[in-house]
Image (cartoon, rainbow, N blue to C red; front, side, top):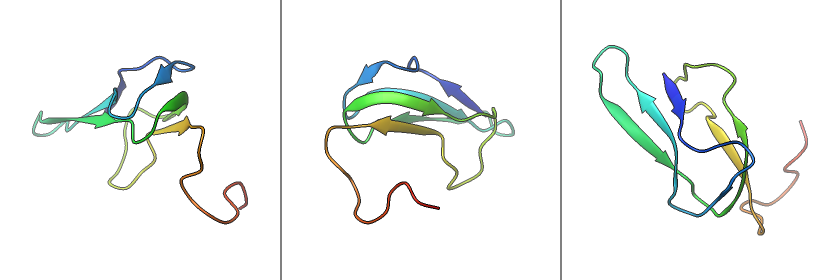
Length: 72
């Protein structure tokens, strides 16, 4: 289960806590931190996430990847 810790549209810094992932079986939790500074603009639609799933997106000033980042 995922819980947002940052407000959508807020400006975050690298390392800021943006979400908490809670294992509903064991009760253990993990804090997810921003990997880059920018605007927090997407949060997961569903309260549950599987390993490797997208939880959030942050729009930063510099590109993190190469190639067609918007393509299908």
